[in-house]
Length: 301
Ligand SMILES: Nc1nc2c(ncn2[C@@H]2O[C@H](COP(=O)(O)OP(=O)(O)OP(=O)(O)O)[C@@H](O)[C@H]2O)c(=O)[nH]1
Ligand SMILES: [Mg+2]
Image 1 (tube, rainbow, N blue to C red):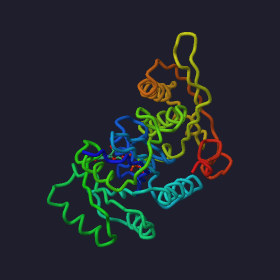
Image 2 (image 1 turned 120 degrees about the horizontal axis):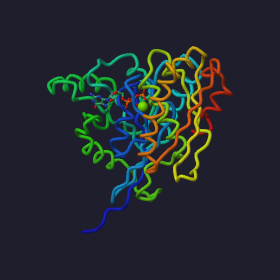
Image 3 (image 1 turned 180 degrees about the vertical axis):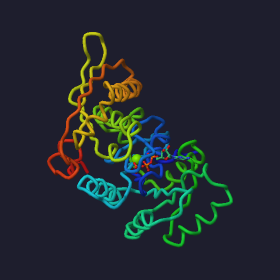
Image 4 (image 1 turned 135 degrees about the vertical axis):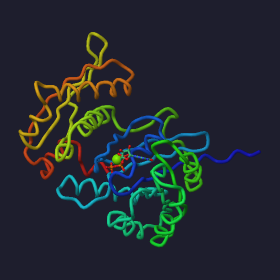
């Protein structure tokens, strides 16, 4: 039997916030490289995850949820998600099976109408619905756009994700292997470390706090005890928020620190000593210079 030529390509995962895009990326890669939370607008940058098999290598691009921006950070997020549509071989448009198609989904569909790239409809969270409800969802979305394929999945429990991968490989062109087999992302470690810290803030805080926080890793180096010493700053928009992040006698900051440290140790495979600082930068989400400083740079995409 002749061997099939190797395939490689890029695939974007897009959709409105909270539908499970990052959960799918992590499921496909088998490792947590994109942070996840039950709060909308968790992902702020494009996150690349590299999936490699004997036949193909696919760079999956997880993107920020497309929404109506309320500040410059939101503009950056939406622009970054939409920019991914221009540079890929296939698009996975993800929707939530347990919610009705809404204006957010329709906005993304309008954008997708302008692309010639194959678009897959990924109906996620099927673990939350009765299988009989699926037909109606498929019919409803298929009225709006001519999808290359429709794949219902559960990113959370992995249901049907293998089938999705097989189908996607079919739409990837012949091409070389860009990355070594064991590489799962091309983001620097310090970026993922800062995201893991931000994820804990998202998990442990409520209302406007999760959205007002940025995290910057200032330094990462091995100390004399063979531990990786990480110094990071949590940036908030107001001093009242700083108080909440610190918590009663520092309890909240301690919790954020110990949860983040565990995840960072898992990722780095090394003991970690984590030092967290907090800084107030008034209205940073609307300041271009702050966005640059905190890692939201247009030239990165
Ligand atoms: N029940 C169920 N929950 C899911 C599934 N996939 C994701 N979730 C949950 O949905 C929430 C959002 O998941 P994320 O992966 O952060 O969603 P996202 O689309 O990346 O969100 P943004 O980054 O804000 O755009 C989390 O609480 C996940 O656990 C699924 O298949 N089933
Ligand atoms: Mg996400």
